[in-house]
Image (cartoon, rainbow, N blue to C red; front, side):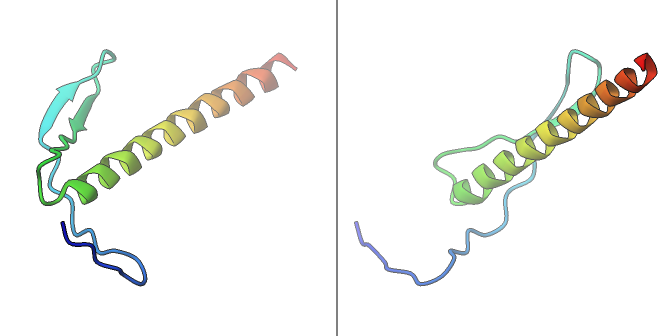
Amino acid sequence: MKVEIVNGPLDIGKPSKPRYRMRRENGEWVRVRVVDADSPTFAADFLAAFRANVRRVRRERRVAEAEQMASSSRDS
C-alpha cells in the first residue's frame, strides 16, 4: 500500500445518484442512498448519505419544536 501525504482538503469527487425510492410508514416517498464500500465513489457517497440524514433530522426537529411552541402559546 502506498501512502500519499496531502496538504489541504481531499477531493472526494461527486456522489452517485440515490438508487431506490421507497415509502415511509406515513406514506411519504423517500430516496434511499445505497453506499457500496467497494465503489470508487465510496467517500463521496458516504458523506452525501450522512449530510442527507443530518438535514432530515434537523428539519424534523425544527417542525417538532415549532409545533411545541405553537401548542404552548395556545395553552397560555
